[in-house]
Length: 312
Image (cartoon, rainbow, N blue to C red; front, side):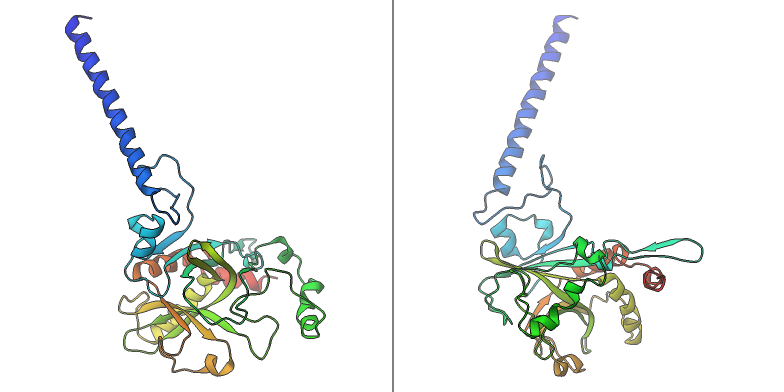
């Protein structure tokens, strides 16, 4: 190897070292920027990040939330109103994850059948609550006890509660709904669709399964769940009956909070937002992604879903 070749090799290696150092410095500068928010910072994957936390959620956040908690720009939407951020994913439902075997021996199963919305609300938002002193609530039905059907302890709780013989354990009392009360059920939630120029209709009930006061600085977290795949499937008929294409961008999905009483539930002329305690407007692109995920992961084949519960 002659001197000129050695010089060229040295120059190449030097350039490679300088490039690597510069690249490392750039990544370090980006990481410092991504962690610069005082309230908290997002630890999931970002372009260029070398180490991150696996993120199984579909996010949408307001510009203000993104700025305060160092969220990626890809998650930001100006269309989100009524909440500062929503993280959505499909989860196992324990009692809702069912399988059936047909006459041909084929197994029909729904797995990860429950859609979960984790909603970040400002602590300054004073929503009405059936139990306003509740600061923590967790009643998600994805534990093993739901595999033991007919549990007499669980079945008898409502009657014993009414008689004053049962006190719910800490953390099991919801903040917005009332438990074991057949007259006043407090406040409930639902996923609704608002077509342009027409009255809104319910797409799916959403059950309050969790509440975290100050989950992150300045924000409470409300957790809502239900089997969205099933409801989106039935919803197709409602769309066709109203001559509205599924996912019509001229309409909008919303999450509503309403009083749980017969007069409110049976009204057919509800208006958004006048007739609800609170309304969260979902960005169109986010709602369509939720719809697609729920249909594929939850109960994308409605016949399979029905078979799950017919084969007993």
